[in-house]
Image (cartoon, rainbow, N blue to C red; front, side, top):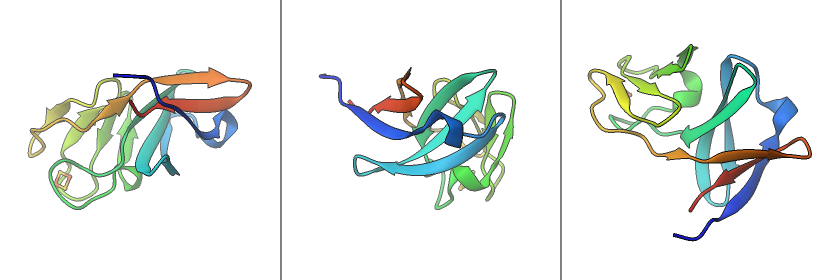
Length: 104
Ligand code: FES
């Protein structure tokens, strides 16, 4: 699949050790910054109607605010029940202080 790099945010707007939501290229994304590295996943939980940006980030795990399912922000895989299905994760690159997300 071709790359589809979208300018999603300023790097400075992604809080360290936290999560924020952005709309980019028609997708709703959750952006995270951990140890100076930015990660991107879909913002909607795969288990129900909850937004991961309202959840709690602990290391590389985001906890869903609704039923406390967890996902690894590096690859989107579900790491704690009741979440069993991965959320989509997206490649990220930083250029000139901007966060680009490859929506594929
Ligand atoms: S909606 Fe996220 S764990 Fe249920």
